[in-house]
Length: 239
Image 1 (tube, rainbow, N blue to C red):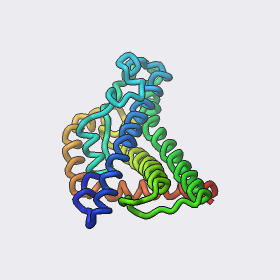
Image 2: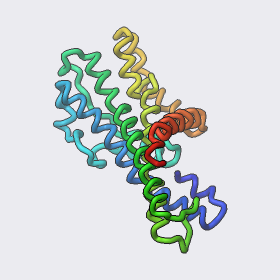
Image 3: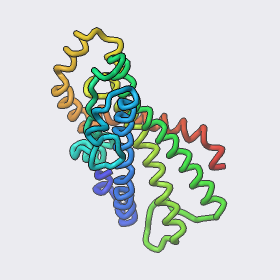
């Protein structure tokens, strides 16, 4: 999103990019916070009160956000928040407790992405019924009704997309992603903890892959497929 500021070819595109950046900030705060709060909620329901006792069972972004992860999401389109602490000793079945707690994050993002798609369709339906004119970019002199329409439309489009890409990103089956916690169910303990030893090096490789678009492009393609599916199944709302 930040890079779009430098790619703008006209004044209208620059203004549009700035507004899109401002719209994306609350979307990112909500999406990352909901993801981590879902982890905390699932762990709490399964018997682990660690996250709740540390104040992580909340939608307050200040409790969840990681500066580097947030900047990475603004620049690369994918990012992360501070991991929710989970103590598997409190689970009746540690492996499945960890897996279900991990799965709660991506599932919450998929539900939010679907919700965003529904809101996009509703916004379009309202705009059509109200006969609101709109243009592909924000520009000076745009009618107030069109401006409000575009802000809501872009907000919900970004909401659907960012949550879809967060779900895909976190389901990568290697540490430190949620997908690796699911793998914990199927791998022998010795293998799993051997892999976890290399988590720091995996993060370094991750930064390189994100910076060079090697990982970003396939993630974006998968997120587009998910949101495309959600738009199709909710298209009856938009008319």
